[in-house]
Length: 252
Image (cartoon, rainbow, N blue to C red):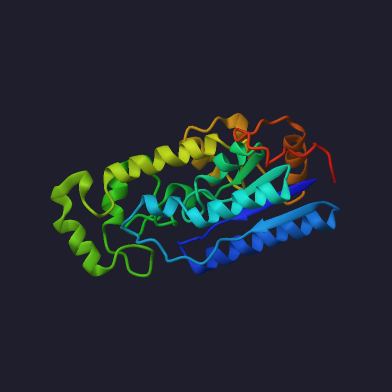
């Protein structure tokens, strides 16, 4: 079995970024130890998108190109994506499907639902309301020391330009409605979505993902049956260019 593992930037914190890299390498090592093939596509160096640009943190053209090229060259049977939003491009599940490969997306509740990446309200309390775009915009326009967010000057500018409404150059309710819809659409392209706890399960359901597509898994070993099942399913490439060929299911 050939599994391509892809992970993007994690803008919330350096520790989260290190955890994503470690997770990818651990999965790849476990596959290789089990006699399978694996390839990891890490993110390339890029400038951190400004926090005020909500949509910019959902895309990464360089990483998208690298993943597409590796799918063509490596011909995986499954693409396993670590994250969706928060630095990992929302387009990766669609790219895999377009090239005829089933994808599994492994999500974290905070990165998926929260632009700051921590599900903590500006007040310092845990955030339990993730479907109120106006509340999210107000939170992300506030200055919060020691967390991802606007600078003090940025927060002042956000307040000063609030009268511009949805065309303001800072987080707006429209930006958060779009963020939610785009991530929901991205997860719908995946053959399966993996979460590791009840918070992740609730996060995926909050984006209208059917429970039948969700998998609560707690270990590497639990991924094997899921990967094997998806690898055996027939898929069709949306790009009939004679370059990418769907590998035969069950190949070692």
